[in-house]
Image 1 (cartoon, rainbow, N blue to C red):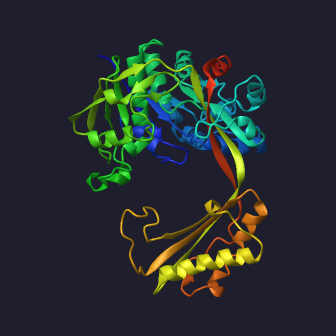
Image 2: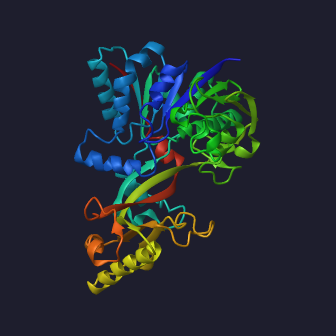
Image 3: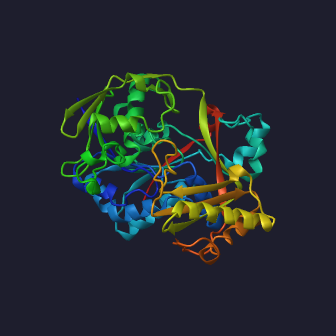
Length: 455
């Protein structure tokens, strides 16, 4: 049975810049997925685009193209990525610019657009689409004047369409992470829109790949069992037409592919395991069967799926005030007591200056005494040093700015043993809040644009 080899070289914008190159160099693959978008990434890209209309995409991808394009062309590996962010066309033009500089012609690049809803929000709200917050139930209208980005999660079909048009590189905006793998599989095997079991299999394949090395030994609970984690191999799925697949990595790389490493990735960001909802299908994770097939090879089969929902998820972000964080190291005898006193001094001096923060909007953490896992493990009674971390948030920038002026004085006007203050006064940073919502599928899909152009 024919198989397709799909690798994933980026789990997020900021992942290893060498990982996708090592996947290309380390052995045969047919497709390379590269995931750059997290929930707030599009908001960051919007800021960039507002400053420069030609920005708004993952610039790391262009660096990758500059390093890898000759090898991609030589080996015929096709790339699917959401690096296009808010500006897939500008990203495509930059890819073409790099290709010209390398003397490469004939390159076909596809773009998928239609996920960006920001400009359409007023008309959508006016036509009755409340886009209520999935957590609080509040209508989007309450914050629409502060929204900085709003994107619908697209599925795998437009990716498959771009590949069918001959694209060697497909640049998308906010498609699901799983579509980076499912799109090529639909293209290669021609899976029908109602072939729910195979679509679910491709979706779960994408889920296992989407976080890069998390399925090959990265972030693994039994980390001491993972060989050469410094050289961890990123995951590759060998997928058959019936939807069964094997998870593996290139020989000679570090890391580990076992039923346990794959199982931990399966649980990542999992809500209801029987209903993993995507734009393409509802996958049932409870049907998955895993088997160790050999060294660094895990077979995945038996997956079942159900029809997709009539809605698409929308990920919006909006400005919600300001925040600031600062930290100091407190050392010597009675370090915990001194750190607690330092925090108390900051709050009292701010109060004297007429600046107060609501209890949920001010935080005190003593790193080194079970701050990350309070109540689970016993805290050391008298550690020789702790890190005091203070944070505040408020709608008023001036209050947050005033907080930043009370940290440095602790060095000479606080308890002894305070050090580690660097970087100057903490500056207020805008708080970008997350707004998840649902929108009727047709309101998005009838605006989709898939195009393929060649240099």
